[in-house]
Length: 165
Image: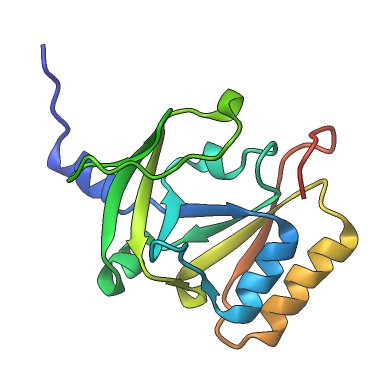
């Protein structure tokens, strides 16, 4: 039996926030620069899966992005990470996936054309193992950028987690 999502379920999914994981050092740089920079292919990858963004093995810090606001100003295209890289739903093009093969997994993402402005970020979540100086640099970056003053800071993870920062 095929199950279809209702209109409300689809609408709610499209309004779900997006996330971008990075190191705490890079997070401070992103805030100061005013944007999450696109990669060489001109696109920025954001995940719809909060657990991937908060994965302590990969990222110590993540940004929560307002999906609706982003869609109103940027082209946003769903993609899905697989063992061979990112497969775009409207083509057979694969991006190179250079992550550790042990960590590869299917992940629902949004591929955004261009940079993501810091004004579209609503929260920054910092892992509890990030040093006090790392947290301070993020807070200072928010204070110094007038376009970032709206960003709320959260903490995630356990002190026992090991993070690459």
